[in-house]
Every structure is written in C-alpha cells, then in structure tokens.
Image 1 (cartoon, helix red, strand yellow):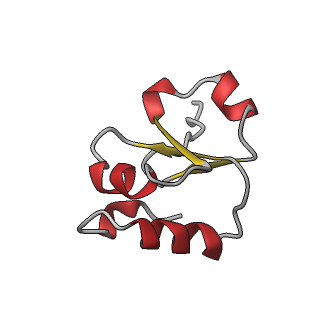
Image 2 (cartoon, helix red, strand yellow; image 1 turned 120 degrees about the vertical axis):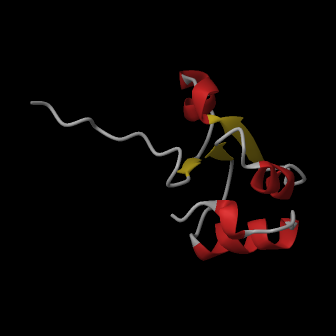
Image 3 (tube, one colour; image 1 turned 30 degrees about the vertical axis):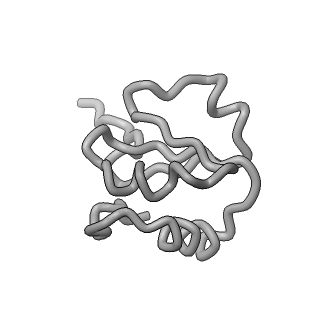
Length: 82
C-alpha cells in the first residue's frame, strides 16, 4: 500500500475509504512512521483502529488485531545476505 503521505490534511472519511477499499473490517492496527501526523490524525477517531509507531510494534498489539496494516515506509523487509 502506498503511504498515507499523499493526504495533505487529516480526513477521517479518507481513512475510512482506504480501509473499505482494502476490505479491512474488525480490529485494525495501522503501523505508521512517527512523522506521519496526517494519517495518525485521520485514523484516531475510528473506534476499531489503533495506530502505532513502527518502532513500538509488539506481539500483543499484533495478536489483538484482526488486521495489521503497514505503509510502504513501515513495512519490514528482509535484508539481503552476502
């Protein structure tokens, strides 16, 4: 998924539309970068969504969610081995 950085102002309606477009329902954990204040503000009013900083993600929050949504910036990647 592209990052939410294309949003210029916080809009809960756009956050809802993004989740609906991806077919996500239930408890959703959205992993964001600390700098993504627009997305944080857009999702904070949704009862079924919790946002978390990528550096603070933990097993409890992942297991307590039906879905875990990463942005391109926060998606863990495997490092190439030499």
